[in-house]
Length: 239
Ligand code: GLP
Image (tube, rainbow, N blue to C red; front, side, top):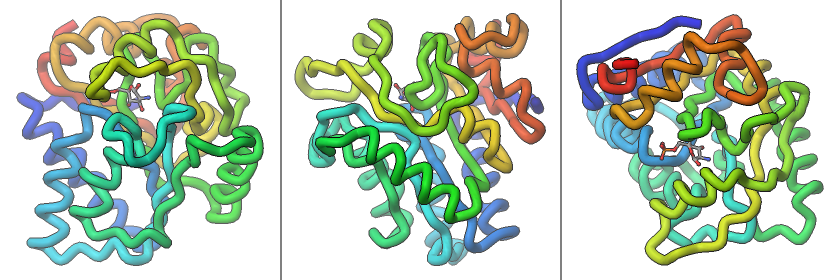
């Protein structure tokens, strides 16, 4: 696992966008899985600016969703769907037929997981995953204890995740379950980048890099990946 530390959030975001652009340059039909959340917000703003100014062609790429809050509709501002649409797909001008996100309103979540697994396998796997890290070390919604053997699945959310997740919503929202790609997807992706910024992530980042590799801290699995990178700003690296 490579570790890269940048002086601030702006520099980190520029470099993360650069990794995405580099991947698409090498493989124009790349399969990309890019997380929602506060952390990658500036990465996507930068990506949109550079896509326009440098004429970067994403038209052959496919985008697959990482995770979603079960039961939260796509028009809700707190959903991953809404976030990605607003901060990534619309500004970068990705057409809807290139985008495959989890349907959080499905009456059959297990079937939704099967369909996502099938799609990713048909596409030949994920080329690049850009993920954030939860305060409890989760990736996507792979909560503490998640099995590294699992592909997409539905999870009961940790209390910490239910509480921290409120920051995405205008009103207090019941967040009981998530639907997520699995750690097996992460292990099989050709490249995985974890980004984190800010002092509040310093503790969990220290554990991820220096603590024991354990399912209790799902992000530590990245240390078993042959092509993973943790990109941090100085505050997140301060532990
Ligand atoms: C959320 C999401 C993750 C996200 C992580 C960090 O709960 N399930 O996909 O990467 O937690 O979020 P943030 O970037 O807002 O800190």
